[in-house]
Length: 193
Image 1 (cartoon, rainbow, N blue to C red):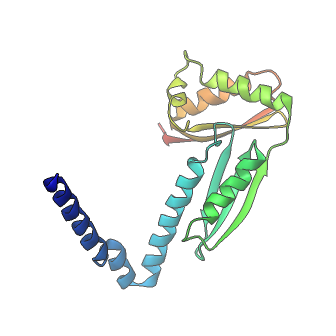
Image 2 (cartoon, rainbow, N blue to C red; image 1 turned 90 degrees about the vertical axis):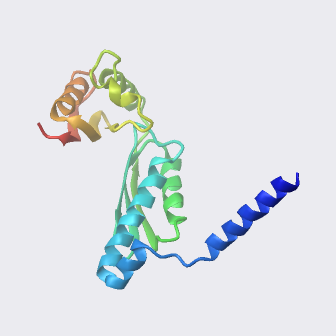
């Protein structure tokens, strides 16, 4: 018992010593090089934090699209389309809670309620992520990279796919569905071959 308590006290003393040490590293070096380099570094860090907060929202799913822009004065502009009004307010609250964010402008659009749009969402999801489809691989990820936004019968595909062929397959799957007025394919291909 004494050795266990002694080990615990040594670990606690070491942790306290580490916390008391001054923090040095790359961020400190960038700050010394000039405010312009440090500013860009800070903006990139804020963008990473904001992205993480948005992607980990509990009800953020394949039928929503959120994006953020970080301005040089640490203002964050939120954009996108969501199916739930609570997702809009949750996104703003999460980003506003970050210490490094000065101000949040919430320009997220809440999509109108429509049973027709809900049916198109589900049909598009099934068509794109069919288990026989080469696009099925995207459906098994924690956050699927293909997002399906439906507003008044118009489908917008957003996100990133591996190649141009997957981009075209997703568009063709959405175009063949009944009730779809138009398809705006904004998917980006990582590999443009």
